[in-house]
Image (cartoon, rainbow, N blue to C red):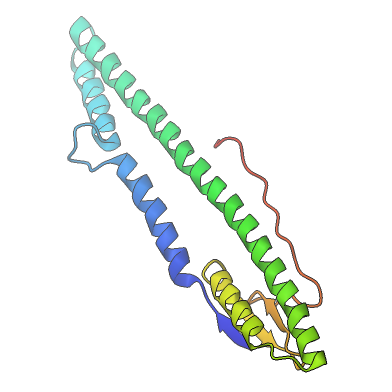
Length: 178
């Protein structure tokens, strides 16, 4: 059997989303970053502790606290947008995989029929191999060739994706982040 992996694609995708999330926090030296907002609020409350009767310091502490909580709210909203994008992408990939599994399954049947009647199945096998490469760009698969010309696809853990039957994945979109 042959192992085909999608590790690079997985790491590229993770890196893209991690970079997006990291950029939401900003760099500590940026005045509008989350850490800068927290530092400003803490500093304002530190100043307030020196003179709790000062209306100016109370107003500044409240303003800084408001800006900090606003930053948290914006961060939560922006993370939700990224999460929704990831959720949709997973759903799309599940649909794509199911369609590709069906194509491999159908091609396996066509190849077996061609072999039974003595026809050349090379173009069908090439087509199937291309689809398997496409699947392997999405998930890690183990390919096992059978004597009748069919291939079986399984996860590295041995879960059969395409064999005598084909698997179908499902995914339920999430509505909100909490």
